[in-house]
Structure formats: C-alpha cells, structure tokens
Image (cartoon, rainbow, N blue to C red; front, top):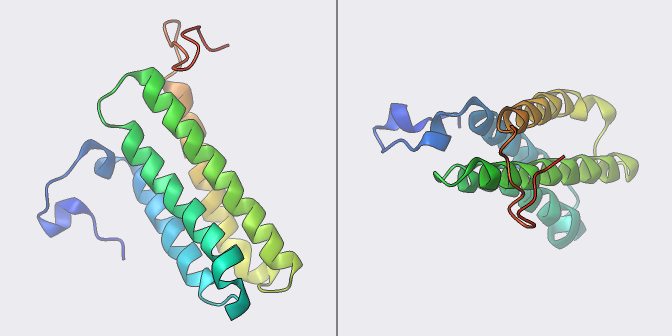
Length: 141
C-alpha cells in the first residue's frame, strides 16, 4: 500500500513528495486495518471516527501545500495535528473498551509519534518573523 506517485507514473504533486505525507499515509493504512477489528456495533461510531480523523491528517497536509502562503500551510498543518490527536484519543478509547490491546497499539503509537513530531517540525519550519495568522491578520506568537 506504500505506492508513491513516482512509482505509478502518475503526476506528482509537491505534497506527494513530502516525507510527512508518506508517513501520514502509512499511519492511515495501519489505522484502517486496526479499525477492521473493532466490534460491528462500533462501525458508525468509533470505527468511523478513527478513519475520518486519520483521513483528515492526510487531506490537510495535501490541502495546505497547494502553493498558498506559508501562513495558510501552517494553519492546515495545525488541523492535521489536531486530527492526529483525535486518533490518539480514539485509540485510547479502543484500548479502554478492550477492543485492542496495548501490544496491538505499540507500533501504531510509535509511528504516530514520529508523524506528530514531523508535523510539528514542518510547521515550525514555516514560522518566521513575517508569519501572519490567516484568521486575525496578526503575527502568531
């Protein structure tokens, strides 16, 4: 499932070449596989929530890199980080409800932590003296 655009001959967009984007896709794949093991009664609740949050990480990385301003990309990376934290909460719930074990989550949590630190680093790399908040027009502190 780790097919990159370059290997398939499809057009490659800037975000598809980002390591953080590829990592987000790997994380999404693991979460989708894990969600398949959840009880059927969770299909429209926790399963759906986990899958939507994981998908949102990938989509916000892509959407933020559309050649807009650094401030706009910064904002979308913030959305991706929030969605990542939502997946962490979903995993906590799944573990608490005994849908999964701590052992099952170990590798997922490790990959997720790597993803989160890369999202943070990418976002920090966009910070600078001229970064304007896209909402207020004031500089972020």
